[in-house]
Amino acid sequence: MAYRRTPAVQARLDAQREAVLQAAVGLLAERGYGGCSMAAVADRAGIATGSLYQHFANKAELSVELFRRVVTREITAVNEAVARRETPQQRIAAVVETFAARALRAPRLAYALLVEPADAVVDAERLVFRRAFRDVIATEITAAVAAGQLPGQDPELTAAGIVGAVGEALAGPLAEAHTPVSGDTPPEVVPALVSFTLRALGGRDDSDA
Image 1 (spheres, rainbow, N blue to C red):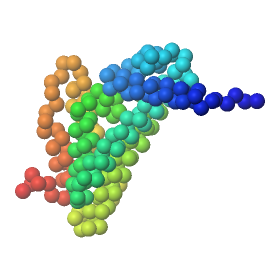
Image 2 (image 1 turned 45 degrees about the horizontal axis):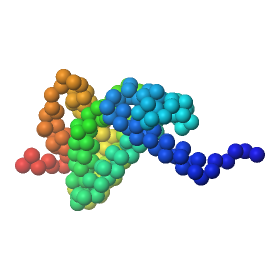
Image 3 (image 1 turned 180 degrees about the vertical axis):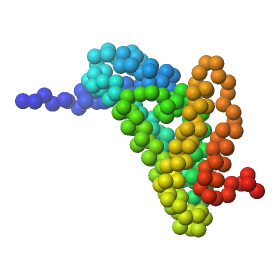
Image 4 (image 1 turned 30 degrees about the vertical axis):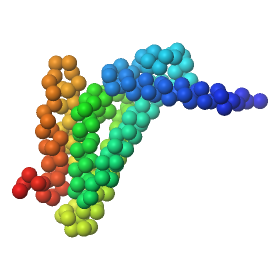
């Protein structure tokens, strides 16, 4: 007869897995992917390294789950910001503003999510991450074009270009901000990215007045 875990045993394992993921998020924010070895995560979670392998087969598997955990949090924050805005252009600006501002407030974590060299499986998750933001923006572009608020265009192509440009523009500031010798990120980075986005859409930025 196959062994069946009791509810108490399963609850203990679920709690341990959650503790592992919380420990990994903390390490990622402090040290990046390079600091998230299986041994380091186990030590931060207060368990033996062997116990960690009950939940994740290797670092790549742990990294994917970790990435999804953090990315889901970021996407939720963006969607909440979008829901508070009225027009499609305002909602698109909210995507860029929220994403960029949160990234610059936690540069080590954002650098790990966007730029830091990692396993191939993590790079695949990054593509999913970018597509999720692309789809949010594309939906709003479609609505704005239909309402005559923006010129006709391919919503997915424009949205993908915006996501790529914002990620590239943030790479330098994030790399500088998480190093010990860096200074503060210039405060104009976020509004400049929002302004760029609105102009890329073919609409009018308030600063153009």
